[in-house]
Length: 417
Image (tube, rainbow, N blue to C red; front, side):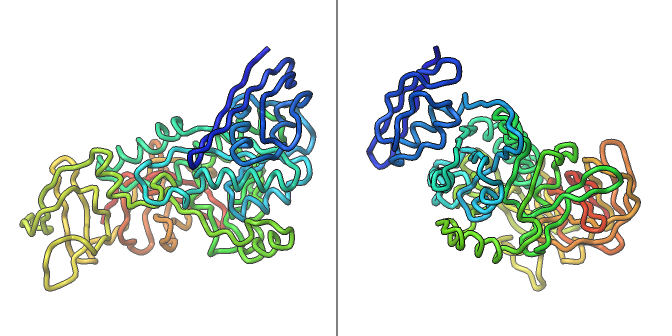
């Protein structure tokens, strides 16, 4: 006999659920506020029971860690964010789908936590979408695991003078590892998400590829995914536009049809990353110098600057100046003209998914791709760019494409002229 307890509080109100479970079935339940009794249900069946928001939240907190089920042919686990994309992915997954939302760490001092895809309100919205369709929804509380795996490395990266992209690390490793483990636990054959990306066959294997809609394509953020995991993944929205997704949700009468987009770097909770880093202990000023080493001014921390940054340098000049590079050890920020940002050689720590000599390299999320020669090196590859790229930053992701398929990815470690 196992006893499960979950509670939830909001706006001064509190709800508590107590369950006793034997042989994977609920044998007694103290769970006021739910729409129907839980006794006789499995934990997965209980996850489909709606109720008052606090009561449903308390139930989710009680059962989340232990929900499990035998394999069922065709069952799909669907990662739910509370937004329109995951809601439509749920529709596509069919009547046996199981929704799952990760509750992740948010900066408690952030100004707008509800903009995040993993906020308490987002969890509630995801659950209510599932329950409206009569489907189970499970919440996995991974706040501490996320803080250690994503947030702390983000802070350490900036402390080293890098410009890390936490969304690539989260989506490419942490998030999907947890979601696929959950899918295995509930006996699902595959995992669906609302990401705009596709999976293509290449040389007898599978590769991630760009979505049909270039404005919504998320393959860059997903590029760290191990191709070995693609067999169990499904991106049902990869072949359509965002407008089509909203139309589909509206036809189904889903509240998510008009819900706004969630922010990137969700753990910042709507805040500025510089303010967040300052609160996490990064401090210490230093010199602002030109390329010849002449001091032009002072700054309050090299982590406040990234290559290519023009605003906020705090120095006067007759011509535009840009942040060129930083030295975290000496606390020095080097500034100069835009032409000094040009990079033709990029070293990357990562992997090639297939052998490739030429590829389109994307060196920042919003940057355009540039053709490059790819040279394998120990623990990664070197890119010899056909034309110079500007504002290439250590710590950012480099993603290689061949005919829209992701053929390699990694983290930029150094650059050269």
